[in-house]
Amino acid sequence: MTKPRVLLTANYGPNEPGWGEDMYDVLASRLARGHGPFQLTAHCHYYGLYIIAENISCPTTVLEDPHWEDFDRELDQGYDVVGFQLKSLHTAKIARMMKRVREKRPGTIIVVGGYGVGTLDRPVPGDCNRDADYIRENADHLCREEGVRFMRGLLDDEPVDREITQYHFPMTGFSIPGLEAQARIPVLLVALGCPNACDFCNTSAFFRHRKIYVAEPEQVYRFIKNYQARLRFKDLFVILFDEDIFIRPDYVRELGRLLRGDPETWGVRWFSFGSMRSLAPFDPMELRECGVGSIWIGVESFLGGSGRTEDRYAKRQGRSIEETFAGLHRHGIQTTGSLVLGFDFHTPDNLREDIDRFVALKPTFYQISPLTPCPGTELYERMADSGRILETYGWEDFHLWKDDVFRLKHFQRNAIKSYFDYAHERLRDENGPPPLQIMESVLDSLTVFRKQNGAFHEYQYMRARKMATGLYGFLRACILHHPSPVVRERAGGLERRYREEVGRPPLLSRIISRHIAGRIAKRSRQPRVASVSDPPTRWSYYRTFDDRVWVRKGRQAGKPRPYKDRRVVSVGHHTG
Image 1 (cartoon, rainbow, N blue to C red):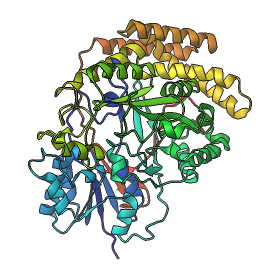
Image 2: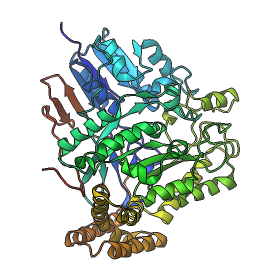
Image 3: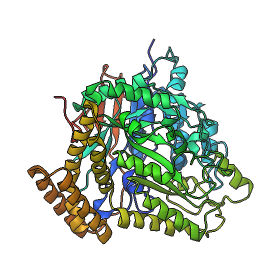
Image 4: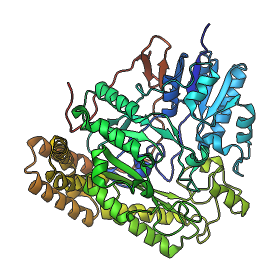
């Protein structure tokens, strides 16, 4: 029997910027925003589409970042099933794409999934064209659960509960300021959903505050080994998506045992999400020994009541926020802190206090976001029931970069933007760009690991020395060209520390240092160009030609080619 052909795609582009930045560039718009010529940039992928494509047995095409014309032509290939990943921001675009499917191929099965599905039952008041209603009423299936097993069931692809593999994902790319190279980071999915139930969190509400595991530690370890082989590097940084991986200490410790038990994976460091409560059972050294390299911690506010109205979450149980961040940094573990602006307890006076305390944490990366009531969450229900949602709130407002969708208790409409700008100015002028935070943390970890015994800790010490040497090249540019005297002095102090604790930098580092400084000086003199969110279209073909994954990149690509990895930028040891 012929298997159905499947097309998986998201919205068409180009995309609008958010307060002047490409909102799909997770570093430039969010986690490292506001650093001008020192700006880091990134590109990510629609990983939900790729994990489904890898794990169903039908011929499948993933169409990423199309223009309308790309999508329209692709429908002529004759797909039996079209699956859309819905972000609420693009509800109108997905509705238009669905209408085109119905016009060209009326018999095609339409499936809509993604976190945007959670907003369809109670559309925002600004949905004048009733796009949410159209999607809800005309999609053949709305996926409100884990997507791989859902699609297997829909396609009669048995057994539905077989292993979900993660071997063939494209990788996140991060730029290095002043260099033309990009670091490429593997991404793996551990679990979906979160029981912490912050009242503003859409991803937690979508799964009704349940946690659904996709990969256990042994599987994650196996997938990591696969990416080591693909990239031919031992020392990798890996992103593990899990809303709070530390809720299960046994999971973290078992993954750490596997990584620590194999010298080939001693150089693997991973990033995931955590909370103050779930981190309480660990000390920083144990986390580092489990392979933790970076943690996202939802600070949200230093004041009472954030997370839930009654603060039932008890997110501050255990160590203080300041103590936790300092301990992680001291052991070479980087942090991403998130701060929310506009809770009901925020006032013009205490909001600046919240921001100043957050900046003092020196988070490596950060997310500053105006509070957003999202349909499907407890916060939205409360705001809607009290008449505080504005009638102008539309799907185009579903992102971080706005402050005019509901009535704040102590602020006028559009007032939060000035606090958003203040926070990023303070992060820029007090702390400086993320490589300075990383450098300070790495140098601190040298002191920690110098006192430890054993081959594993010696490896961590030597790796930290190499990492410090790799970061050294960035310091001279900050000393010479950063606009803040505080940051210039901080960079100078780190340069002196490096020479005292590591020694004279090698010739290559000195050459790179001069190159980066020159490039950043040139960027400092150039006028700022408005951000454009329009990456090249990517077609990925699974089981269409043979067992390999075939890829076309860019609208001018002539034909698909078998996908091959390039080497990742690394300061560690390659395996070849």
